[in-house]
Image (cartoon, rainbow, N blue to C red; front, side, top):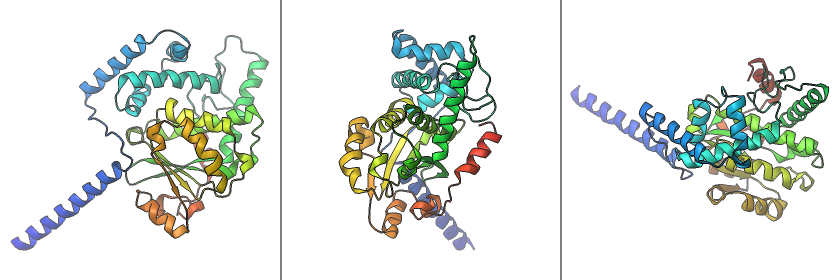
Length: 335
């Protein structure tokens, strides 16, 4: 009995060791810096240091958005909000301060002075709720019309399904988002309103994934793009610039990998050169391209922690993306 018990114990330990090794390998796939242990003392010092770094920044246009947010919506910029930026920059308080300032400048640019200081939610009194009340001292019909147009074009951007959450995670615990440029067939790239609507849709989906989710804030996200059926006519350089700048320098998101599945010929000549100019070096190194048969692609994706069970059906996975139902659920929950 003793021998059996010892063998069982050794076997169990071996399985546990293998599981830990596999988990560590999954976490290190993209060469990301590991997060430190978040003790209460450590967090207290980091929050204080971040506020010090913010105070040190000159009071100019680069800091204007943060200053306004701190005055107009102090409930939205508390410790939980600031912690997302600290985690994104792995507790480099100086970088977190710069990112949070870029974030608020871009948030006000995208959502406007009347809605930027509300939660980025579809329901309740969120920035994207059609029933959201106005905080403007000069509330008038013109302002209401502008707010309604903003919500309308954002909802169109979300419903396009160009950028969608899969609600699944890779083996390292990173959230997975799916990008399908062919969905931009219903998008007018000559319309500034529609471009801003799609850009806001990306912000909404990213916020929905990270707010209140400690694991995703710490571990990050991966994007899987499937441009196989996209036409060259949908390529919008201005939209690409808006989105890549948001993902790489504004939003408090740790982007792990960018997996591009079956890109068409024009991606090499048009899209990749733009990505190289806009993306920081560390992000460019995490772009991986996949071609060949579906079986080959699924095998290669599994090797980087993306098994069939977490992938959308569009590329041979088991996940059915139902954007309409997801939007309805988020709206009903006030998220």
